[in-house]
Image 1: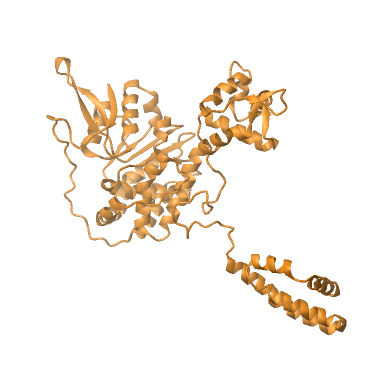
Image 2: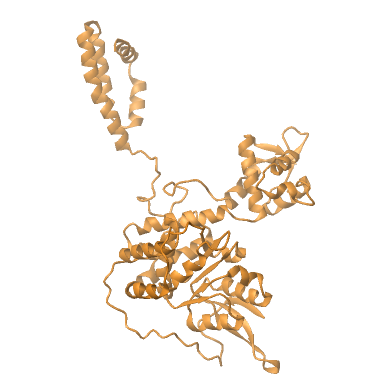
Length: 478
């Protein structure tokens, strides 16, 4: 029996305090910068696991986060998943075990051990074979779900029955700690909502180096101590940090990504921009792949309106169009039949979208305008560069619109064209004496246009028609 709710740092009266792990070993003198540490972690991870640049950057930040967990109010879970086995999930956990703070690498434990060890040690939980855990024993699955649902935020706890018979009571166990969860397929929606997805694929043999634990311990010992020293030196800065967070992240994603962004900002260099780009790539992509039927329906309806280029569509036509989408379930919604108009209305009711009379007055259906709020709230922006304004987050100098042209650039472009004009006009004057006066007049007028684009347009409209005629004649003489 288990429940989960916010938990204070103090346990109920009569509950013995949780033992703290042994951290008596003194930290070495800090000899590496934050940039050097993150770059080293990224390179080490990619030696043994095939990760994209964005995945590697996020995992590297998460490694440092495990050592600075005392400065964070939330923690992002890493959900390491793949379509099939032998894709590197367990290997990534094995590599992480060499780098993170207080690693607890496990595949399956009893519910009693799970909550008690997290409460006592506050480890970095590296949970393998999560698909088997959630699809196995129901009691353990519910305990694990409760730990994961509450353990992303400081103060989260699970309430577990203790004792027997007349002495039965309950005890609150703290569940807050960093967690990386590996398995095949998807996790429960409530867990994925607290996670950063790391989707792995199989790679050809020889693509990455062979991992040997006995060698890895020796290779990582010094750098792991340096990570701990760096976090110890910056712990107060990280605790007080309030990093700018891209607005494209959902509220829950913003909460769990904040500690990673705080680390990136404290490290400096290219990492603040790199971290935001990586988190947007992974997290916004996860929003786009939301597997709920409601969000999938909205996404498909938006695509149909866009493809047909209409602002209204009948219920019957919309159902038929949905049934033609091969990658969606609407063709066999019920007993092999297409989605009915009544069924469509029921699915759209939670989004406050209802069918009504169309402009023709003969059919009932849906207007595009009725979907605008639902589209904006439930379908994330896709296919946009991180530098564009859909992702504002306060770093304006780093996140400018990629195709923006400054006034100085426009002015220089106009100046270059105007400077070239007298050269061409002088040549024309030498060859065509009859056009000399008109050409000189045009050159004077064009020279006065050396300003911004707006000024060029305004001045061109004000010039006498003679300049226009002269320019045309000059062009004909070339």
